[in-house]
Image 1 (tube, rainbow, N blue to C red):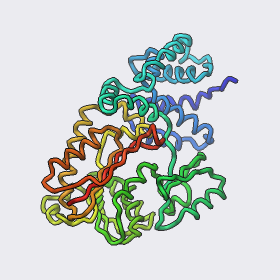
Image 2: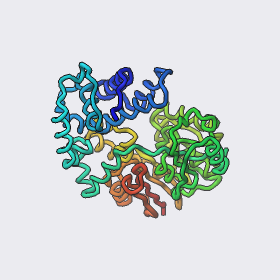
Image 3: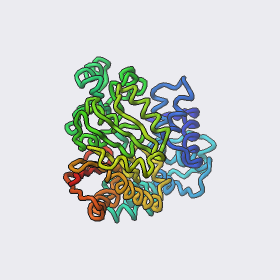
Image 4: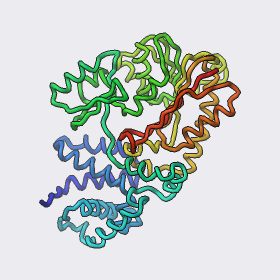
Length: 404
């Protein structure tokens, strides 16, 4: 059965792709803006727009290959969309934008692409070379997994709710979900629903957080009353999780270089009923301030800036903006962060280092190099490598170190 294309929806897809691929705007904010721009679109329309934008961004190189596009402009984006539509098994309407397309040639190229992993899975040459160097034979299965849509996961905020309350509410609403064997406060949502407008979310009863990310805070083994430093707090997902694990008792100093993220953290903490987090702009972490924090913390979390290769399924546009030079700069920053924060840990205290990267050079090798060079003695207690291919969740690395 031929699926009909509605021109107004295709125009919205083209506009989104133009913003992302030509004007280099972020995919998630672009899609959100488009979906909220027309109140008459129903759920099916919104799904069509979002799915096609993300899919084409994810497989940009594949569709370029199939349609023989090189110079990107608005006309090329129309033809790229048409290529996706044809390779999905549909027929094209007789629109002017599609007049020059050769269906047989496109389908032949699509078939030949299946035997070329870097084309089939749509990654730049340099990233394919780096991935093979870092992961060897595992690279192909990881990039295949990272092209599947991410699962939607919640973390129940145990400061305000418990799993029984939330699961009953979702069941009453007809929402399908599954529980996780590895993250006790997590729910994997199987129904399509806008949870950010849900009253329980607005009241702070749960947070949106991937399962892999939910494994980080428990690795710190926090307890009520502890002093904790979150050195790369961002918008605070893991700091909020730590506060819940600490039962809102103790101190969490959340540090970040982005003031707007810290403002968002404060808003989220207020919504979650969390009152033990103090935020600090990293620019104010002066030498004197650092000196006062020497041997201060019982626990330190360093969820460091990284390549984000473990979350490409959520941010497929990152494939086209990442560079090897930038990744190398990030690795230098990771080393500096470890060196800067580690003296703030008390003897006997625990430090957790984590990334959402799948590359060992940002993960195991960083920790090995740090332990070897540090003037403070640390031992590696435990490390976890969360593989997207093996788990279906985001790619993460988590290491727990003890200061001896």
